[in-house]
Image (tube, rainbow, N blue to C red; front, side, top):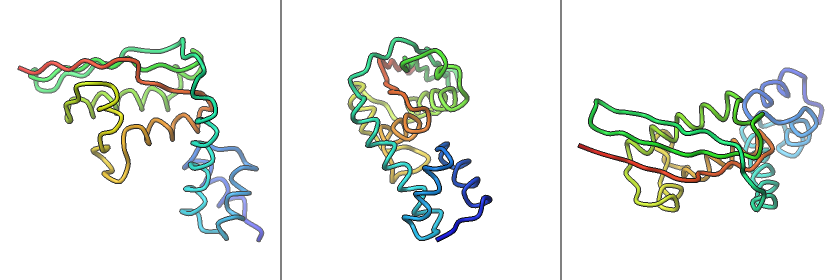
Length: 149
């Protein structure tokens, strides 16, 4: 099945994947862009599983204070500074800080297993894996801290 360039570009915008990867996913999904996006995300997650032991030496501390009553710090890591500076990484860090302020977690593992507040069908780990798939690097939550008055 031949897919037009606009559909491929739309899928690229949604997923951040390469042209050929999007084209193959659209062919596999029979032209259904929603199914193709799921295929791209699944393939990206599979790639990241194989790379999960890579060192994540670069990172950033994200903070968020809600109504001067809840404060959070989140240490988010990636393999390189290049990825840390991307909008995808920055947006992920902000979203995760908001998540931690809304849903208390005692440990990183508990935080990763919690349902994402903006889409209950995903966990926080799923959200991180999506961004990892886009960037091609392992992204990891190294530490969390939450204080509430």
